[in-house]
Image 1 (tube, chains in turn yellow, blue):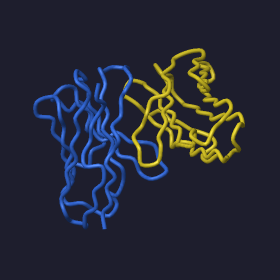
Image 2: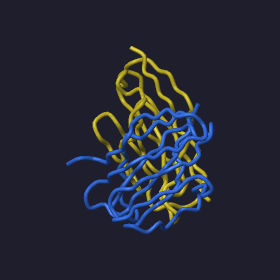
Image 3: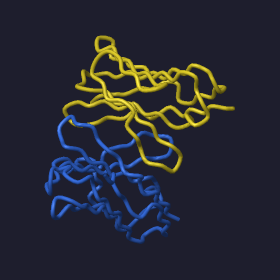
Length: 107
Length: 113
């Protein structure tokens, strides 16, 4: 069974700060997903990646397959980025999710 | 195009009562998932359908939980009877199958009193 660990569990930062959320997993995967979940809302897929780096607006996701590690970065953070960010990995049996990182960006 | 639709969005019931959740996946998505998400945790798979066939229900507590996807489109998840510990968010997701991206519905937040 794949274990997915995220850190930190909770993160509070000031508007404008550079944010990094980390994810590590124990077994080889086919893809890694970064998901965003707002309070009371559903889950939105931010990135799906299997190698290298992807960028979308102020969000950047990287993955190191050899080290079984991925990071999600947010540049110039804004209060609207406040949400739970979840890392999930795809392998033979489906998706395994991390517990999520609760991010709060204060104005 | 509409995303994954779930109803109701919120449900409050007393313990021992039955409850049902409904999911309408994205058109053309043959794979449908039901997840349970407890507060502060990531989603956990309950059951996965490929068309109308349940291909992975190993994590579904079959003594009280049941699910169906009769025509391979909409799906219903039922709990009977509900227990206090069933309070959680129940998420439905759909995809084209395999390692394709999953699209999530807004979830149903269940509170059992």
